[in-house]
Amino acid sequence: MKRHVDGSAVSILLGVAVAAGGVLAPGGPAHAHGALASPIARQYLCFKERGYDWPADGSGIPGADCRQAYRETMDPWPFQQWNEVSANPQDKGDTLEKIKAAVPDGLLCAGGDARKRGLDQATQPWRAQPVTPDAQGRLELVWDLTQAHNPSWMRVFLSKPSYDGSRALRWDDLEEIYNDDAPQPVPGTPYPTYTVKVPLPADRAGRAVLYHYWQRDDAGNEGFFNCTDIDIQR
Image (cartoon, one colour):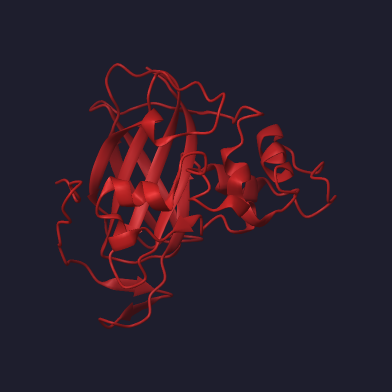
């Protein structure tokens, strides 16, 4: 089912709020945080590889892509905040235009936050993770959730064949491949997870960027944005 159609918000109230091991009553405080773990998002990869605490020039960061991302601002904030690359689109992003207003071209991977703009750097190519669609042509995505929240929904985009990664990602570079409610979280270690399977276009192979948007459907109004670099194997 398509969760949101641009131009109208489909209001579907389902699920329960889950946070910090407890169920929240309606209207209670809730926080949703996380990032794509498989295939892994840029900021989560850089966080896991570490090396950004010292030396201050970033020379301890092992990956050239993450090192360049750090040096864009000389600040580890994008990596330390791996689970909070977020923005607050008007009306919970019920149209694509409202999402674009909150997350402008050139800052898609940063979730519209200029302080995290290193995640959009295109000077040093990002490492692409090999992925193989299943027999139905779907790719499994797994989110690590430091705090889960339902109801929420997800939209997933894939970069068009014309995008080669030589500049920061723009909305016009993307085509939507998935739009639906978020699943219920599954308990896990170290974090609970969301798992969804998204269809990849049958004619796509090689490098691409997956762009993932996860939007809370509550008063918090927070949406989370991730860029993941993949190499589609056929």
